[in-house]
Length: 149
Image (tube, rainbow, N blue to C red; front, side, top):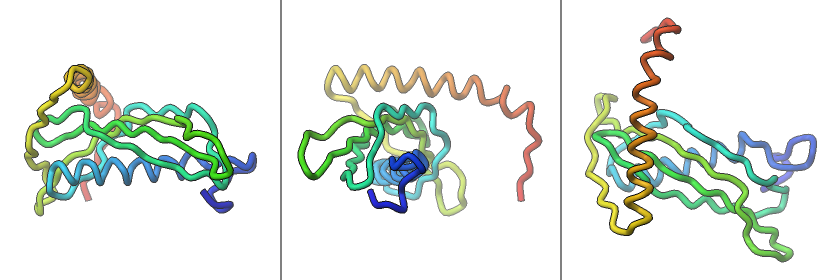
């Protein structure tokens, strides 16, 4: 991270980290879907520790759940001080990406086959979060007028 990424406290802006999280989620979803993807939502973002100017930041992204066209990606953010010290977990985020075809409409993606017990647990948790997102969406949309350009 460089000085232009810093806030007034000398730490990296959360928005800079979020932009990189979004990019990591996109690459992960795109690799799985083998087609273009767009960000549908950030469900949960936790900033656990500050990231300092000069830190090298690593974004580890993996699919946790896949539906028909949507994919949930868990991104773990680690920072490392190059002058010494172990990488430290500084943030986590769940990002929902949707595959889109050339018509810009949601497009089907290959299924995800969880293999380990941890992957199966994360898949079931992701499925539950996806259902919660779907059930809350109509309520949120009912209070907003939507304009399609």
